[in-house]
Image (cartoon, rainbow, N blue to C red):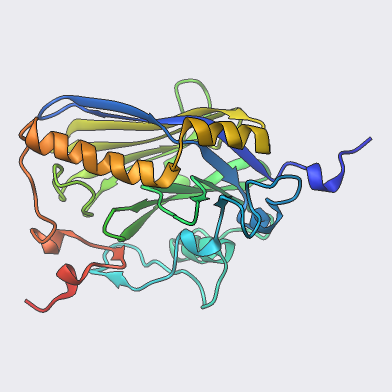
Length: 291
C-alpha cells in the first residue's frame, strides 16, 4: 500500500554542524550547529504538505526561489560566461542556463537538488549553498554559490572534469579554483577555494577549504545525519539552534572580532585590492564607485 501523496518525502532534513579550522598563520577552530535541507527546487511549493513548520506561507522555515543563484550582472567578469536564463526564470531554469553557458547543457531528465539552510523567521542567508545535478541518479555536475555578509555572491561551476570518487568510494565533485572574492578580512583575495561536493543521502558531507600561496590555510566542512523531516524534529532543531540565520551571522562577526583583537591577525579592508574582486554579483557601492 503506497504512502498518501501528502506524506511523500519532498525534502531531506539533516541534523548538521559546521566546522571551521584555521591552520595558518594562527590556529583557530570552532564548530556550531546549523541544520540543512536537501530539496529539489520544483518541490518548494510542496514542502508544506504534511507539516506546519516548513513551507507554508506563515511557517517559520521556508525556501524561496529568489534566495538562491539570483540573476544579476557580473562585476569584473572573467573566465567562461555565466548565464541565468531569460527573466523571469525559476531556480531550476537558472541552473540549466548556467550549466549550458559553461558548455555542459543538461538533458531534460536531469534533476537539481539544493543543499542549504532554509529561510528562518523571514531571514535568508547561506554563507555557501550548493546545487547538485543528477542524471539517472548519478552525480553529473554542481554549482557552489558563496555569499558574503555584504550581500555579494559568487558562483563556481563543477563540471565533468571535477567528477571523482572520494576515499570512501563515494562519487564527488572536486574543484580547486581562484577565489578572487572578499569573504574574510583575514584571507587574501588572490588565493584558492577547494570545493568537495557530495550528493546527500543518509549523510551530509560538503567541504570548502582555502589555500594561500599553495598552503592549506583553512578547512571547513558541513556534515550531518539525516533525520525525519517532521514538525517534531524541526521543533527540536529550533530549540537546539534557535534563530538559525541570525546565529550564523552573529558567529561570523564574533569570530572575526576574536581573530582581530585576540589573535592579532592582519585585517584587510574590503576596499583594498578591488581589481582582485571578480565575477561577483551584487557588488557593494565601494566597488563600483568611480575612482
